[in-house]
Image 1 (tube, rainbow, N blue to C red):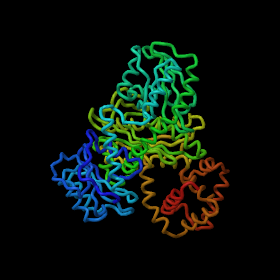
Image 2: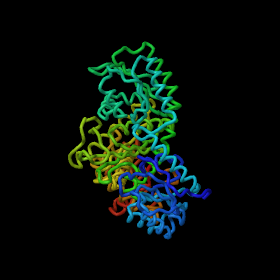
Image 3: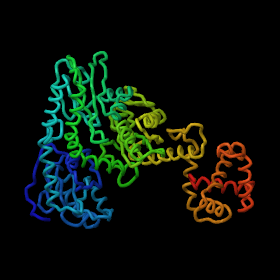
Length: 574
């Protein structure tokens, strides 16, 4: 530690643990165990050796200077923090060494949130970060938005755009949260009023924009998009704000009670360029929260760490039902095309329903889709079904709610190739998990569905490749892949004529193995198999005869056929 800790805690009204952690852009703190309380208030940051009689209201965040989290001796620090009225305790991290089970148990028993401080920083810097976060939270209390040094600039930009376009302006991020807006005129329509008052575009409106195809055009176009007046809704212009190929947000101009300027399109194009630096700064300010959210979502979907803690970090009710959708690059496209396609699909998935959470990976997306049953469960909002907005919440049993996830899979698979230079994807919908704590099971099955679609295409089983499916549509292919995964180690450690055939032929290019695969898939029909291989039937017969004569493999023997079938499937796309 580089400085002596003050004895009196710094206090700030209105801060919560979640808001404090959101200010940690650099990854100084890592949450290991969520608190019992949904989002406890934090009004003081104190050091573990600064005294205290335990009379606080459970609103202290204690920095425990002492043994690291990996040491059982840290149990005493956890109990001491609880005695002194803490809601959370920060221990020192030891890189590569997990926390001691006794320490986790002590925090769980005490109801405390347990965090660790990165090994590359010190206690003084950690205290400074937390106290700054408390002060900033206090400064933003009651405003309905996080304080920002650049907020005035963005508001001024919105007013300037309003003057040049003749319209009422909102500047929004990719989640349709309002970052800035111009003055709202008395003639403003209901959608603008509810957007400004709520701080974001209403979910029903987002669903309608997605259904109409406007969002698809917005995410993939670099020009101004015009939406004609309809009923009580005035004419609107919208343009995406970009940083290179990355979409940062959008600018909307509404003709509220007056006509838009004839040069409004040009004004919006210039405004999009001017707004980009502001939205980049906004993105950077949110980067700590985004990184923390991604880490928590990855942990929840891959069953890494404590699921309840990840759910807390994401703001998801742990008992809320959900399903996971996986969309994966289908191959055959340039990396740039894949990246751009997945960027657009990520935006589309995030707008599918309230609370949808998207994890973007190199060649695939994972979407956690809340499927709330009632008004107070999970993150929820107006639902969509089978790729279209229903305008109401999704109810019913797992089967009906599962169709909602299948609808998203279908929407992503259909959207991808329709984009300019779009890359094809395969999308799998996992089964409904009864709670968010079991989301990893839905994720695993969704990924397995995507593998089934790839296998079917590789083997040419469908006239047109299937691009989306759920567990029902994938059928027995799911169980076959599970069996193949289980027997792979046995196959790889085995020996015999079939092993010799497969290993020798794969080294030479795999022509015989491919021929065997087509022959077995056609149930021994030489003509059909030859057609799929684009061969003359006699050529295939010659290859089968060569397999028998050279390797001593008897295709008429049932056990041999079973072993060959497994071997061919395990070799994959040869």
